[in-house]
Length: 556
Image (cartoon, rainbow, N blue to C red):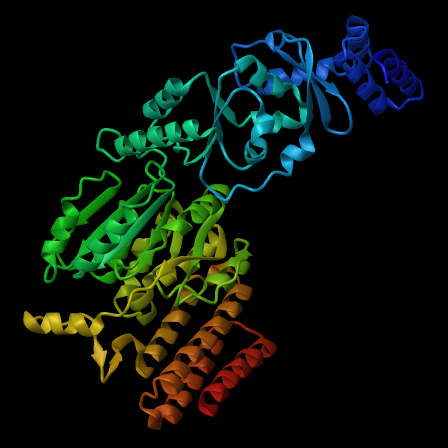
């Protein structure tokens, strides 16, 4: 078909209101060089004039280069099918194909959740379809060599929300200068472009990351996460964990706090930590022996991050999971507490979100006894009446052994609670026996109490005393409402029943005592139920729950 026939066909299609087919035909006739001025004038008149105002408004709203005006843009976008546009290059006077918004937004998802993106391109965003889609969730930093053509895409209405989040640069020098001068901005760690471009991005990242972990380049203004390690007389473990953590690629958004407790063992290893020059590390030697509660509090108080991940010195943080958890914390600002999955202690965790209040309390109460993998909002925790709570350190077995669990339960009334199924912690092997021997060598008493082969906090007596502590905690928070307290008593009974069953069934500890222990447990449950103004139905339900737990234990 010759160009004249193609144009005639296009006019016919237009008259029949088949506008897509008409545009296809006119573009083809134009490309063949036939009646170019007439065709172009009619395309603009029929397809562009009614959309011009919207294109201009969009451009002025989200243009990535503020020094390029709308009229300076080289490209126009002719409305075609739904969310598709023919690209017309005004400078070259030719059509450059079609841009499909749907196709751009159907690009593959970015494999990273937190990391930002850097891209280097000539002008054609179609070559990197994923870049615009990713701008919905990530910051995108772009170096565009043909700025007037690249900026032209800001006219497209469907791309407005994307380009609002894109920061553009004229060249690599300007890109590096931006991150060097504003060291609090997260460095992109995912790169798009030709091979040479990606290599240059890597070089820039290496240089700027190295600068940011120096004292001169360190920025503490925007730390999202502190990894807090309260450590006690286990310097060799703490040193291993710090070295592992410093392999991570994060800098301005993260820090490591080591709160050193104890003065008897592995002091040379602690000194090696003190001598590490990486500015992300904040090491504090209290030069005395602290209680567990004091050291946990100190770790949180020393932190600068919006959130604090608490980790025992015997456990490893899985660095590959930090991307996920940083994204969770950055995007969910109402969280006060996160319980991360671990390989052993919390291997059962499923994704679950609990709203602030009784819902969060029911999920969090007595669910955080193992420290590692607990993430708390620092500001929310420090708002708790910690000095008043501290009085319970004198004789409350719950607070003495699990002060952190007490705090986490109270955070349910400060914000939302999340359980997360991405594994963050790999527990280390127990070294209690080894530590026992080390203390013997130096003639020191092991601060961890062993009771006839059982850890002091894990005997029948201790678990029953901890139950009393749970009830005292519920009295402390009784103003939150009777429904919360009733849920708390139910959880306390179930938790204690579970722990007693471990002692009897799994550990086979003093099986001859189980009858007396169960009688004591039921008496404590009865007493606890009577201490609160429950009605008869509620009391019967709670005592029935206690009987169910006792029967499950003795059934073995």
